[in-house]
Image (tube, rainbow, N blue to C red; front, side, top):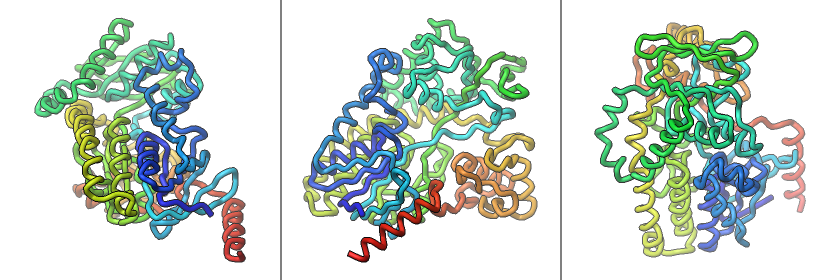
Length: 465
């Protein structure tokens, strides 16, 4: 059995920075991550990226090497390929590595599980040739492959980032179909003060838009009635802008309308969550140090609310300071002194977030899909199926699950949960907080009987010592 002062789950920006800060404060750290290399989604495979690929992806990507190098510390044990599937008693973690189940014990646990792309259920989204913009970016980061004859659909800065990276890779997208409207931009102006405070992000966005314009990439803004056409695979995207119908023939469709916290692990141990209106999703309840209602468990990074890679790294360090203080490795005075510049940095990083959330809201047509649109891909459950369960008296996702099996597939509701909550909320006229979310039970990820058997053998051997 592995044991450490701190178990960090996830080796993205928050997990890596927390591990390094905690190790430097004298804590023993066990870092568990299911990927073969550190970096999370945002810095995926950054240590192997060539100069050419680094130039395509930009300095925001290659800066991740600073965090990955920080893991070379005597107090850090980094287990790659470790798939966490259960947390017990808020101190014990079960995971699988190399096909065998294992245990780990920690005095504190940090959930740095990052974000998921928000599902965008539109007609045709389950066709082959349709993927998320984030998945296309991972393909570029990990393999250097860019999607050909692709159209990017949705809203948010990631669309511009992926599009510019595709341009630099020599495989530009055919077009961007954007769902944000002039009314959204007008509403976002009340947050312009924060946007100006976060001016580096505004400048970065303007540079990306200029790069796309210089490359001749068409942008269709204010799109609605989006549908993906195709028989055996995607062959085109149809949409309406200003009352005019459009169709773009393509081979690949890349969908994106924001990211949301990955809350599965936090929910599995009954950490309370609340609905966040600006980000249109649930977030775990935690204090300014990342501490949750489960006193030994902390959450940091995008898993606690979307803020971006740099904000996640700062939040990870802040949480590490509190845990070091908890475990008598530093005084409260030293904790506060070290946290002060981190908090200033975090405030600056998050200053533009309200503006971004207001300017690029989720696509309304995907939040309230047509009845015949599939929302649960695993079980092929449609939006109409979910609405019919509301008519039968279902007030929340767990009741609906019993009727139509939504959320019972391999993804365990990761990609349909928010859609089901929103549809039930709108249909019943009950706020999302009252509608609730799926009850998450272990295993968090699929686990084989052989892996569980190996875990039981290991526990028996430990008892027999």
